[in-house]
Length: 288
Image (tube, rainbow, N blue to C red; front, side, top):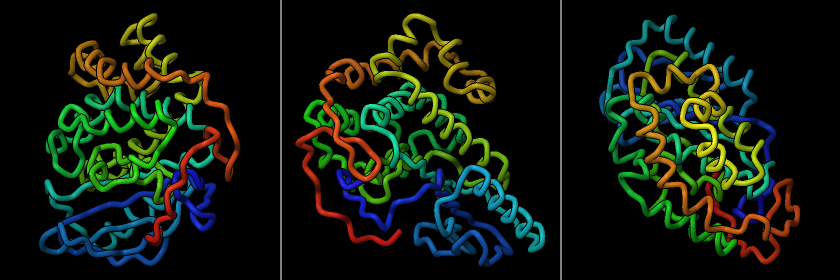
């Protein structure tokens, strides 16, 4: 993904990267699947468990099962902390720019429901801000799509959104920061499934405009069924689906409809397609 500043050393076939922040007691030191790191934003006995490399869906599930076993073996206690969260990176290196924006559009539409699902402390959290809390991200996305220039997305100003687009430049992924820190690793597994499903369903549409059209023609229930599948009821819970989705449609509408997606004359670079004339930022120096 040279157009987003990602060199060959970041190229991966893995679907997921996962980072789990935790405050608690008797935290294990992991040497398989995960790196054990320190995070200065956490308090007391704490750790951040980071997948050593991106994994397939099955590989990530096995890594979570291993972590669960280590929790049990260590008698680990996980504290419910507003500072702890889970960050999931979804690989977008092998999809086109239009498919990427379709993925982004579907998340924007569903964001209120999804962040609510992630935990009561996550709404308005400064480390995973929703677009309704900080709409600068939508402005940057709209300009990037119209101008076919993605440099404006490569900034720390966008890093702490619930959907972090800066990671496109760093790792060739979209990072989702909304999930709460939790001892229930099944919740994290489900969350990873939801995000991967969102990516894969979004790729079935010709453009973000067609996603808006699907909602207008079929309504909230069918939209949730299409994009969330078996997780529809779990995610929507007791919330008024039409109200939350309609707000999301309003926020995503200009991004989806004010760009001529047919104008994207593609060239293929490193497995991902980009419009001719795309400006390439300097490759970042961070290690993955």
